[in-house]
Length: 128
Image (cartoon, rainbow, N blue to C red):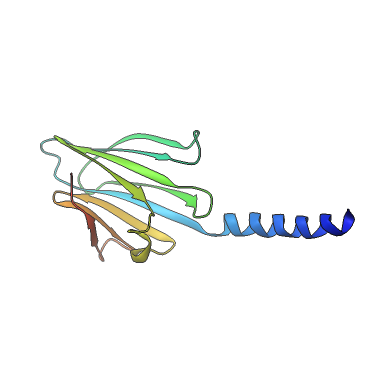
């Protein structure tokens, strides 16, 4: 029994260290005009019912940010601007190639963009 216990403890500790070591700093930026309405964003974790970041209203150029563990969290953000509504999987497979541990996601009039800073934007999708 003790021969199995130590390897299991080592695996568990290794998993916990790895799961918390890759923190992603996510920034959501409004790149849409405040007319017809300001951008509203609601981000939630798909893996944790308690990780609801709430509804945010952003002025043009304003952002909000949070950090999450790459291995344990998965967020989706729903965007509302005028008559447009759309969702983006935060740090999904379309976003990862353009970001490192810091990621910017911008909603603009013609769609959604990501980048590792506020200068290198890559379009990932149009508004629906």
